[in-house]
Length: 59
Image 1 (cartoon, rainbow, N blue to C red):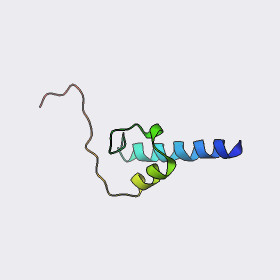
Image 2: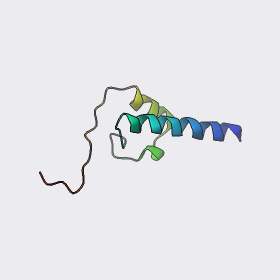
Image 3: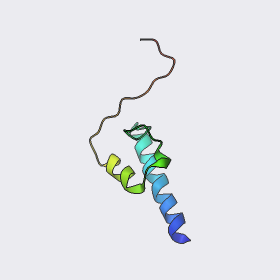
Image 4: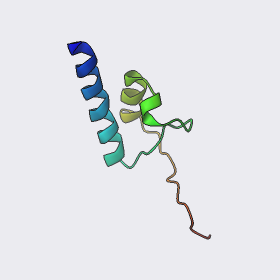
């Protein structure tokens, strides 16, 4: 059981770190909670630049 709790804490930390870097979704459009811990680590360590999504803004 402690593994599940630790894994959740690690994943939450990774998601918080990605949000601080202004990443809000996985490059394929999935939400962070749908990604594996390894996928989150890979994204955090990558140089992928994801375009921010703005809603309700006319160009």
